[in-house]
Structures are given as structure tokens and as C-alpha cells.
Length: 81
Ligand SMILES: [Zn+2]
Ligand SMILES: [Zn+2]
Image (cartoon, rainbow, N blue to C red; front, side, top):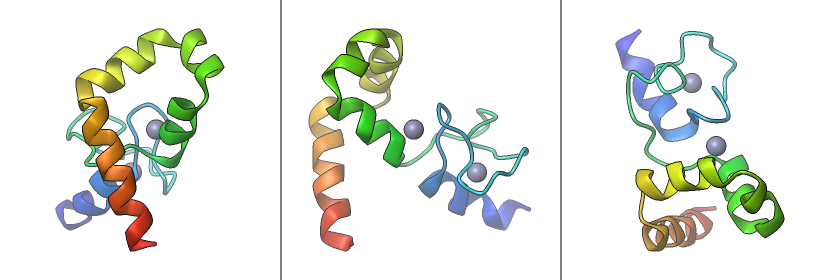
């Protein structure tokens, strides 16, 4: 199923799971890095209260991508919609 990996890297999240409910999702299983943060990740980043409760995850996200890059990605995503 190698041809489908790109679909997963673009849409799935290692923290929030596979967008398609695939138990063999390569992103969720840590075989490949996701390209973007998922919608749930963006919601969490915008919710300060939630961020404070889950500092570990936010630190993970900061490692995954610098915060400025995340915001740039989001702007680009909104333009595509
Ligand atoms: Zn997936
Ligand atoms: Zn996520």
C-alpha cells in the first residue's frame, strides 16, 4: 500500500490518529513524519487553556515545527480552501 502513504502524511496526525481510521496508518504508527498539523492540532494551539493543560504535547509540536512555520502553513492552507 505504498502508494497511499502520501495521503496519510498530508492528512493524518501522530497525536490525533488517522483521518481515515486506518489502524495501519504510517503516520500514527510513527513510520513517517506527517507533513502538516491536523485540524485538531490547530484548535489546540489556539486554545491557550488547553495548551497549558497539555504542555508536553505543545512542546512536541514546537519540536515538530517552529511556531512561525506553523502559522505560515496555516495561512497557506486557508488560501487553498
Ligand atoms: Zn492515516
Ligand atoms: Zn493533530
